[in-house]
Length: 292
Image (tube, rainbow, N blue to C red):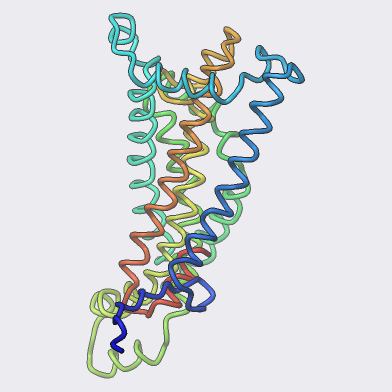
């Protein structure tokens, strides 16, 4: 009797290096989402039964309805007051993070390279980085308001500061951990510092730099929301702060949901890009760096 041949399922590599079948990965996803569903169910039940007043904590269904309304509201009021439209507010915050993170990457990578490669720059710059990084980004908000006013420059400045330090420290670590044998081999062949930087230092430091960018991006996202609450016109932080001042909790919660969803998507997108860029390292090491 002939048996039907079936195509074997493609295995999935877990971060620990363990090979699992797609069914196991699906089960893991269901377990993780199950906790969220249970939390939402308890939240909805507490609101419906009156254990929690809706004015204090609106139920999830109300928050979802408000989220959809704020996202799809293109009325005359919304068009004249774009800072109250959820999609526009999200775009404002993302643009500020993109500009600030770009500045942070440039400043952080250059500074980190100088500290790790040139002894004369190591002490003053390293001391400056390790001293300033202990100051939270929010502590700079009053200065940003005084220096830049209620403009786009304030939140961008906060994001740049927040992202620069973890990226600089990651670059320092990445450059200092490059195998010195490769550097010495190129020097023997007559390579200058520029060639060594291009051929050895940057490729070797990229994994560490990408990890620093991930940390800087997450901190930058948190920072821009806080900065918009205190010193900016428009953005998700401004939207949350405005509706909080007039005690419209469904709108506040809808803004918070947007912050969480966008932050999660940013982190997952970076992990996917990092996994692709570091594919040459092998699946296990790449995945471990992606979740680290």
